[in-house]
Image (cartoon, rainbow, N blue to C red; front, side, top):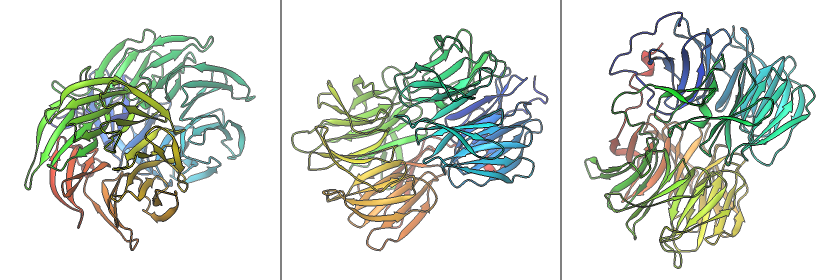
Length: 618
């Protein structure tokens, strides 16, 4: 039982997260778990009572949460660049660790006095938890560091540079490097019982090494898509693997055979899984803002905690596709497809549909105005095709290339009505105009984040998580590679004249290139807040939306930058809607904006994300 009872939860206050639960950690010796979410909230769940208590908020989404061995402290790592230490007995914020210059992706408690963090600033920091001071800065990774684990005085880390590294905790010295491998290495874990380090890779393979000698131990061809989380049972050493092929599996520590397949849950967040300290259960978060428990031995789902009757997930909007008539098609974390319409003084919902097969998070949406169709791309690799403003279901295709991140429909001669989908596998998939045939072109080495199609020529452009930026024919032949970015490229767009492209990257730059020869024309610094979305508005104007809810208007003639915050969370997409720009946000809002002055002229809201103001939570 908990040392202190959970405070009563107000019916109209906090019952679940208003955003995907990105990470869950069970509390040792208690039927409780700490959960963190995309809305920046950190909460304590009573797993027996089914109650949730809000501990507090970060200034941005939380990527990871962990609990110390005694169950007295939790640490949350956030894209606000901070780590927050929470006192679980007193239900209060104990300390803020501040020193990273980009998203903090992971944290590990070493003991009562020491912690270690990993960040997209490519650094590992060793912290003095009593004072909040940085004891040591460890550098060496060539790209973002996403995972860190500590055992027996050794730090293990992995990330986007496709390596697994071992460091001496006391000195910060690099002791060993495994790799580089052929794909990104998002997640690592320690098996202290067997002196092993376990690595989960984007090619779906688990690689296991001896942590003392560095020798290769085993390789498990575990999944058909990227592995987002590996975790080791603290009791048996069994390996939990969670991947974008929708499978959550447990592997035997001795034979490396598949031991258990966890019962499916359509809204699970693959990165959020972890073992309970006694090894008997597995916990994870969902895109619906809830916490789920499984029995580790049978794989059966025990319970889902959070939410209430009638809850249908979180309307965190991932993309919008506007049209000249003021309508916008929308997709969101709740898996629903919506159509809304803006007028001069209002915005309202005109249609809402749960796709055939049920609700699964959707990342991508596109309009085919000529054919009066809407395309939606889902996390479970499926492409959905709808007809008309009423969103009547036409077809559903399983593309089998991982989550679909972006879709566009061709209008150029010879390809009218063909759709192109950007997938996590690195492929661009062409879907025939009749929606019955799909052909994949493996163009990128990393997950494709976005694509655009030329309005007149048979040409596309796309960007990827490995920093790639390409142009290609609609038959799948690469034309140019555009150099210049040094980190994930999140979005790309083609100028209205079709002569240039603009791209926004996590290297905090906006680059403008000549489309014909791939020549870099301009590179503009955007500050230290990561960009997410982009619209090449006219010959002299590019609009960027960032992960903090701000629009950044860039004057290409002068290099001038104007910034205005319009939302409480990241701006996931920008789309033209008549004469206005429409921005969708993870905060549950859709904002119509005047490009001239960045004034918001209309709002559609499906959800209020933070029901308790951050200032009210101490």
